[in-house]
Image (tube, rainbow over all chains, first blue to last red; front, top):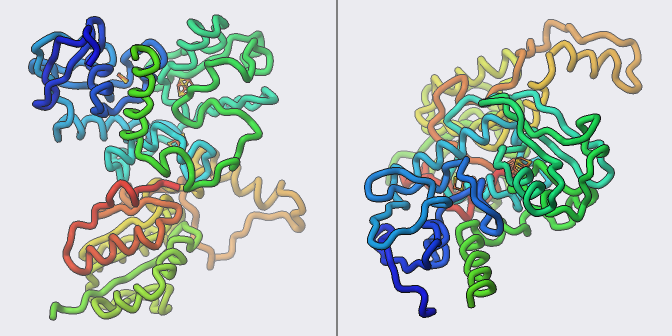
Length: 246
Length: 180
Ligand code: SF4
Ligand code: SF4
Ligand code: FES
């Protein structure tokens, strides 16, 4: 244990050490405990919109990806109630878009699908929306299929803060919210996006994808086909911790 | 020995892939036949369920009037009804037509389609009327269990079927939970 880790809190009865400034989510994942999450990618700033990572801190719900860890607090995460809530949120995301997994190139590498597996979603309790959403296939190398967008905001945040291009933005409210492109035509081809942009590398679902990659890895041999998202995310997080903090 | 169970199966708006997967259970089918008999099923070509069966497996979503009748027939005659595969659970690939009007779909296929001759929309009274949209089974009747996959693998179907005929919990372990 490095010398700056001294303080602890309790997560589902287990004592979790944390560094000053760490979130509940980061401390849990560093300690090897998976908290389901979708809008957060630990390599970027969290913005707590999907609420999948909700935990109960001293009796009240908070998004763990933005909640600072405090010494002595009592945190609950792996409870039947919270997992039911996470399942409902995941099912709502699945019905409000058009998720045809058998026909989706992201299948097996998709965080929404893998999270649904982890939560044991065998069907959606809600009626399918079958919304009409536009696909932007104008760019020669990148495709934006809004049917599968879960509005996690990662592309928006990364394009703004990392690529410094502001290619993506969200518009509308509630169920009509959608991703829009900063270009005169509103199409990707006329924007400043390029295949090397960080913003197009981290879409958790099959909404922003590279063209020409289909079936390079066969179905059944993809990331979450071979290791559950819980193990995969924790392993990735812990490797990142070692890289950044030794 | 416990009473032999009865199983019925059918395909609505599906591709028979789920039934192929069922046949893929290979010699385990013989094991299953020790514990259960098949009632109405495309496997034995029996057309209607006689009396009550214990387990009904349905592949495919609901896309036409005939599907609605058959689905209700199954619900009325099956103690436990199981949605088998993505189309039964979400509407699946056939429900991609839900983004368009039925009229537009029919015209695209039968009037404007590439290579269409003698263009007209088929209207033979033998043909079941299409519904405006394709529906998952549980939006039409109460469904008891859902087995995702396109198709669910033979191992997945075996897990569920063997559990149901022997009275175990048919829920899938994460290793067998797949939507593709
Ligand atoms: S984005 Fe994910 S959940 Fe949606 S269809 Fe593709 S694989 Fe399935
Ligand atoms: S396109 Fe992808 S990264 Fe962007 S908001 Fe939608 S799901 Fe998130
Ligand atoms: S991961 Fe924390 S709110 Fe989405």
